[in-house]
Every structure is written in structure tokens, then in C-alpha cells.
Length: 345
View 1 (tube, helix red, strand yellow):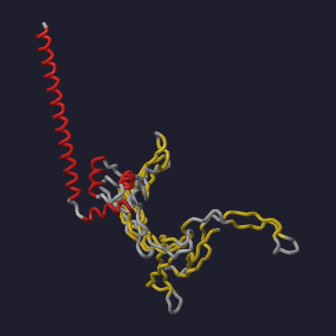
View 2 (cartoon, helix red, strand yellow):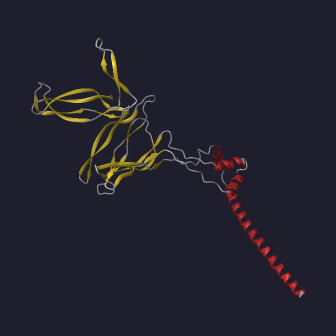
View 3 (tube, one colour):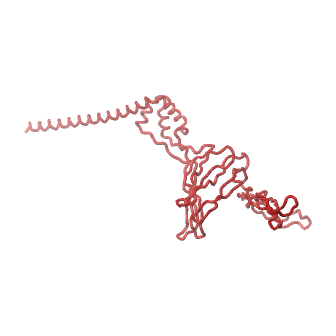
């Protein structure tokens, strides 16, 4: 019995010793594998060029200027088009946002130790904090803006009729020109139909004189015809741009036949075609501007106002006019009025 007990003890010790050796060997193998992986990373980084190490130092000193992608994205924006049979019609027309936020991918321990060993002159705490820092991508530069690069004109039938809505599909950072002038901007009409057409509607871009309220705006528009399901459709496009205030005069051309003879002021069979810029007032007025209107004056002195009402100047209206004379084919004298100046009233 005693020998049998000793035999079992020897067998138990043997199995325990074998398991311990197997566990140690397995652990050593894993350590060797991890060490081999770390050695590989260290070898790759230690063999990197000096420029890569300089790039790391620059990244630590100026983390916002290295490896940051400019951010210009389309974000949703709901727009009420009208009322439909099944309720309100809301369309995501989108808008371009100049900046967005993100986080730098955090580095793991092995990569951190490898980079630290390859850049031994860097303070470990500074390196760790810099690599864990959250950095927002740069917005568009000073000479560019986040603007639409693809716009689609959608048509929606509402209870009040057909409504057209411009929907932004994509945005990008676009550089500004040195002067205010017209730049290309395309809009797609009748998308997904046999009449799909891309039209250069134009956009006004560029700087104006600093220190005033002038902005680069459309000063002359024109219309172009495109084929549609109901025949040709007119699309208004920007033809010319210039620096103007919020309420300004824009060009609007009219063609007339003048049958007046320049010699004897009589009618002639060969009319002269005249192009008259009749103009139109475009823009908005600041509602903070007010104007007083006198409703009661002094009987003895009409220049004295005893009571006045204040009203807001919120309408962009013509302030100056010019009269153009011509004769029609029957010799009847005609006249045409053109706008020379616009302002708030």
C-alpha cells in the first residue's frame, strides 16, 4: 500500500512538472513572438530617414499643421416646399459647412514605445500627450470658401402648383478670384429624365473694397432656353458681376424699333434698333433704417413739424429715372422709362 501511494505521488509530480515546463515554453514562445514583432517595428522605424524624424518633431511642435485634411462638407438642411395631399413637403436642400471636427487615431502602446525609442530625444510625456490630442481639421483657406460643386434643380408638385428647389449635392473648397467677377457654377435641370441638362448659371465671387458695405453681386442677368417636357423653358443666369450695396440697380435690357429719321424728325421705313437698359432694383434693405413722415405741421410755419410717424425703410425701390423717346411704325411718339438709381424707402 505504501509503495502504491509513492507511485501515485511520483506520477502526480511528473505530470505537474511537465505541465509547468509546457506552460513556460508556451509563454516563452509568446514572448519571443511579441519581442520579434516589437523588434520588427523598431527596425522599421529606426531605419527611417532623418526627414521622417524631423516630421515627427514638427508634428509635436505644431500638431494642427501636420497631417490635417481641409474639411468642407455638405450637411442636411430641411426646406419647406409646400403643402401636398399627404401633408407637408420637406426637402433636404443641403448646405456647405466650412469646418467639421474629428479625432486623431490614438496610437497603441507598441507603436508608441517604438516611436519613443526611435526618437529618444523627445520627452515621453510630451510625445504621449501630443499623440492623444484631439485636433479639428482646417477649414478652407483665407483665399477660398466652402461652396457647392454640384446643384440639382428639383421640381415638386404642391397644392399651389409646381415649385422648383435647388438642392446642393456636393461641396468643396473653391479658390476666390483676385477681383470681383463671374465664375462658373453649374446647375442640373430635369435630372433623371431625357431632358436632363447642365446649365452654367454662374456665381459672383471676389473681393470688393474693404471698409464699406459693398459686396460682389450680380449686376446683369440673362435667360437661356433649355428643352423641357412642356417645350422650351427659360433659365435665368448671371451674365455680369460687380461690387454693389445690399440694395442696388441691376441691368435689364429692352430692344425697341425707332422709326424716327435722324435728319427731318419724320418716320422712315428703315427703323433703328435701340437697346435700352431700363434697369431694375435688386436686393434687400436693412430694417433698422427708419424715416420720419410728418402728419401735422404748424399753421403759421409749414416748415415746423408738430407730429410725425416713423416708418421702416425696408423696400428697395427706384430713386431716379430717365425718359427715352422713340416713334413706332405708325409715327406715333412713344416713350420708355428707365431706372437710374435704387435705394431703400
